[in-house]
Image (cartoon, rainbow, N blue to C red; front, side, top):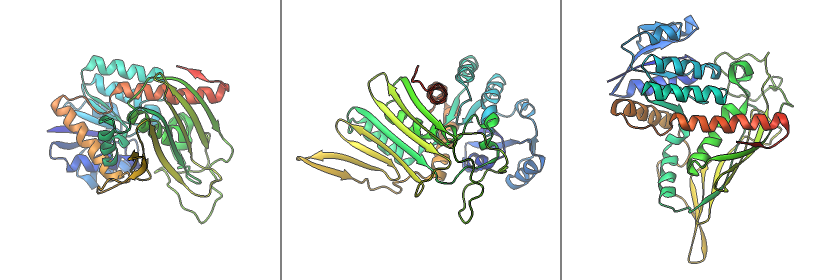
Length: 350
């Protein structure tokens, strides 16, 4: 039985809490949040009595084996290192940190502790992702030399800490782009990135003036502060010659929201968003192949359940996680390089 504490009580925390409760090999033992009222309500809702306002106090609880970190981005590395030093396994929401230096410090802590750390790259755990990965591993796409991904919101700045750079580290690039870059890189076989050329734009603000169109809002939503980018894009080149293009936005004068992830190989291609489809050719004819599966699209709830179950299994059985700290470091190198390139106007070599 893995006894778990969840640190952070914002909207993402329930997607960790519920799968822990449903997992027969896990026990939700402790909750931590700086907001006392929210913490009390969560404790009552989930039947948890070990409630903490400070994560240090939770980590002192020797009965806790592992923690999920669901806090602001600027605290991820700090809490992860403290948890590892306290002898806890760690599942940390993406991104791993705000800087490459912080990510490397977490990696050192992981190696010193001998504990498991899993980065919250939840799209790796989608059922459609797992199926496509099996085809890729069987060389059905051949050499994947190009990928492109887009997550465009025409209106979708969540406000609150998401739009405060001191807490989030950035806007759509760190909130949405981290998923787009990671899932492409993962499916491409995780080639080593060598250069990044990126742009970031802050032209439209949070557009809180817009009426008659709803959008996702953070648990602590307020529209008075916004110092993150509206839009970011990047071209990433890899050591094996492959390349990845990505663009993401919180707000853009676009006709509609758009989400796609596309991969192109020398034997076939694939899309995993908005729905899984593969492209190949047989008998000199191009075929669009649709797998007959329960869900062709990314299932948010199912993916989190898979992610939590995988984490519990890795902790209890000593298995290597699907999203180890080393991957978190590489993704942070790419993300930071996008901002560095945008600020300098130059291509960044890694």
